[in-house]
Length: 119
Length: 107
Image 1 (cartoon, each protein chain N blue to C red):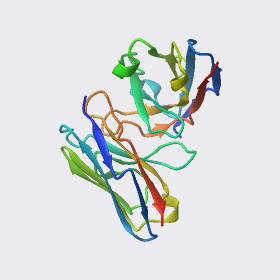
Image 2: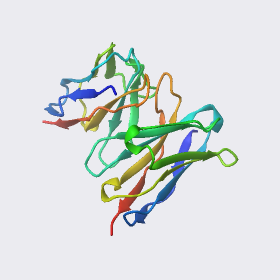
Image 3: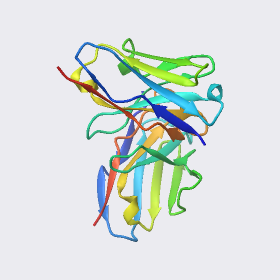
Image 4: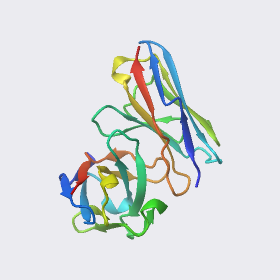
């Protein structure tokens, strides 16, 4: 069965970086994209971007351009999302999701990773 | 960027009621529209894709409609387990914007 397992919760200082991992299993990793979505406490879902696991090609939301880097390691079927220059308003649960692109943007989701930014 | 506007932002309905949530895009997105359900403290779950196709395993009381700019998610016979926030997401071209969400409660 398809599973996406994310890394554990993180606490970071403002200005630091965080790297969240998303390990995929149960499907051919390089056949799909991985989408990253975040959700601040009590707020809605926010699309951050996606990475094509095959080529490593990326598409980032303009809001995160210059601060976010999405990568993948096909040898271990794992995608990564690194966010730099963290601010308090980056405190959120970060989700990865398997992304077939068409006909649906996200069919299987990771369990989420809470990133807390606090001094 | 195309904006996605959901309405209402919240609603309260009785068990068995028919509930409709709308999602409007300010430009056409063909049928590249998905609906998700997120129960409190849980991970979002795909309900509908391609505007009207029910994801496997999703109860048939959920249905989606629309194309172009106007879309709807309907729950035909609200159940207690449907208490959740529902989101639409466009995916015709980047950015794949979400609607702001609609919270559904039981009256």
